[in-house]
Image 1 (cartoon, helix red, strand yellow):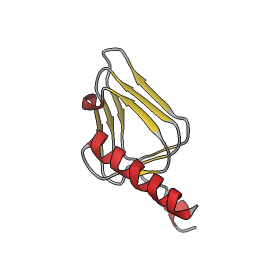
Image 2 (cartoon, one colour):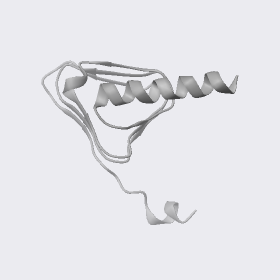
Image 3 (cartoon, helix red, strand yellow):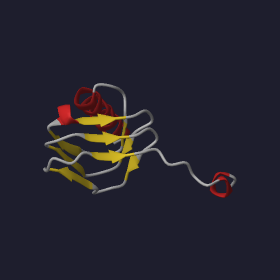
Length: 94
């Protein structure tokens, strides 16, 4: 069974590379419609069943992890930008 989990992991990483154009951390299957309109930053991670619809520009900053079953839908003319936010120092010390 471990070999199937490994193969699934490799296939998901390759899918992420081909969709986004560089290496990303993928933990489950995802759907991206119009990936040419979706830009992601460094250290990007994605959990299970994420759906991204990019009819117009969607920019996801560095260090962003999308939780399971998140939907980013941009079908209008306004861009969606998810910026980098630093954790408060008290949380980093934990």
